Amino acid sequence: MVVDQPPKLLRLAQVAAMLQVHPKTVYYWVRTGRLNALTSPGGLLRVKAEDARALCQSAGMPVPADLATVRRRVHVLESDKSVSRSLARNLKTKGFDVRVYDDVFDALIATAKEPPEAIILDLGVAGVEPRKFTSALQRDDSTKRTRVIVWSDVDAEEHAALVEAGIDTVIARGDAAALTKALR
Image 1 (tube, rainbow, N blue to C red):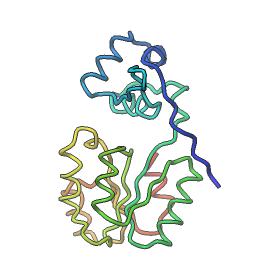
Image 2 (image 1 turned 90 degrees about the vertical axis):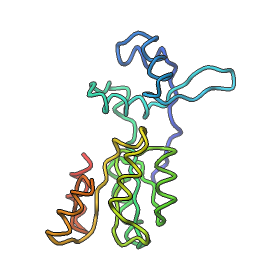
Image 3 (image 1 turned 180 degrees about the vertical axis):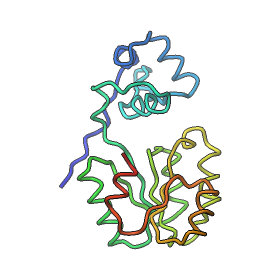
Image 4 (image 1 turned 135 degrees about the vertical axis):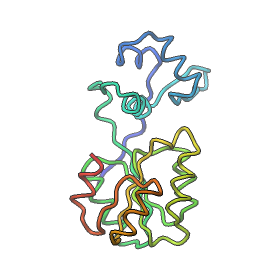
């Protein structure tokens, strides 16, 4: 059984030291919304290690070794409970923090609250329209860099339509190795 550790909270000075920038730069990133921060009961700003890692990835900065061990978050939107359990178990053994949803709206709300690195989307989930799903993600600054991976069996025509709709990758259902490779 994989036990998730609570998020590691860092002071702004710690983030600045890791990224080799001035602490005022980190404070600016927080104030402009480029870096999410929490306010402690004492009024001090704290940054989740995974948010600092996400900033490095989105800005093309090298990820420091201290942040490289942060578990990468993936949301799975799957209609079949046994498939979602199997997929979650497989991804957790590969070091991912996996959240599973069977409702489109629950997945979008959770994605807005805690943006994942990627969303694995089953087209068999009721109410999933790929174009509307990707446009909902693109409207929010915190989720516009979230990759959407469709994990369903589709023909060439559907594949082209999905790519046109903004889907990043289409993987045949059941190909767990290709799915893990796409997440790397």
